[in-house]
Length: 178
Image (cartoon, rainbow, N blue to C red; front, side, top):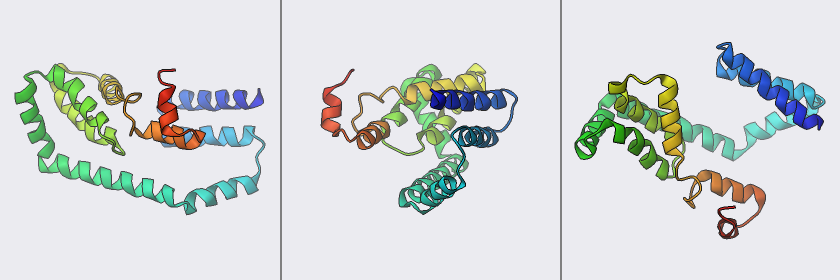
């Protein structure tokens, strides 16, 4: 019960700070501090966790993968490739409304790390004509990028759930949809 209260307090701190326009990184740091102190702070556990995180090979794989995805997105955006892609897509779909859904859905189907980094500029481009708020574009991007989550066997979340639970992927899918 105490663990649940600690998590609720942590989430409350993060939400309150984000509502006060505090940067997300600082809000997450404050939230993790609340969780650390609420769970009986032990410096030895903290240093062990930090050391394990910094020395784990997969941590650096993810960091470098996201870095290079961001580099690729920057290159595509600044070279005009994304604009060219959107121009051709407009000729095919004839409507920016279709593009708002199709671009993130298409990119969400591809098993890639950092898919939001690629699809966000496409949604931004397709949504220009409609004067959509940043929040609306974020929801559109998120919603349509994740349509495939429960049907794509190579979706990262499914692989992670299988690995963490110790349940083979084949058995995991036999239980679908519930």
